[in-house]
Image (cartoon, rainbow, N blue to C red; front, side, top):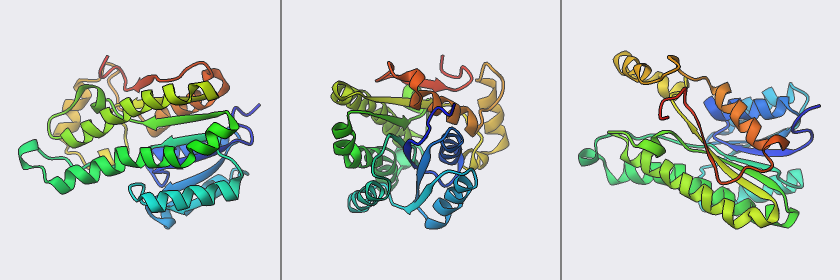
Amino acid sequence: MSQLANQIAVVTGAGRGIGRAIALKFAAEGANVACVSRTQENSEKVAAEIRSLGRQAWAHAVDVADAAAVTAAAEKILAECGRVDILVNNAGVTRDDLLMRMSEADWDTVLDTNLKGAFLFTKAFSRALLKQRSGRIINVASVIGLVGNAGQSNYAASKAGLIGFTKSVAREMASRGITANALAPGFIETDMTAELKEELRATVLKGIPLGLFGQPDDIANAALFLASPAARYITGQVLAVDGGMVM
């Protein structure tokens, strides 16, 4: 039997990489999915893939850092779907640079997208989740939020903040049967990591005990577990999916 039969999932950053993998994994397990990304084209591509699996899908173009846009999208999703059972806050960006050279704009862009975006979407659906007394919130953080990284102070701050946010939401909503957990991916093969120079990739690989990079499906499988009935008694936790990188 499908683990997420007829549930409604909202996935931000669903247009590619990890978000796309999560959206497709959820659909394969019976969920209907609202796909959110920055562009309508990317959202619709993934929505079309989901429909080809026999599930319903909706495509939304949203800047997750825009409060008015997020509120409007949430209202539309609830009107279209009637309810939301799973929220995955996955949308994220990087603007890497050493601290002394980092611009305020690059700091703000990363914090607004990676952290504020999760706050806005969680808040937008919180009333509906609390009213129905059920739901799963899954925030996609990063191992960088656990250990930091030179040249990524903005990204590390956003992901560490997301972990703290997750724990606070878990405490606030637990009495209504809602769980909130975070995933901390390690080095995952995506469009974002494909841009790294080969020598840097080789250095990173040496620090991974399993000796290989992760794939988007590795994160999607972990997200599926946290969304499934098997994880009903797990909340406020951070699950590192990193090949042992930060053990």
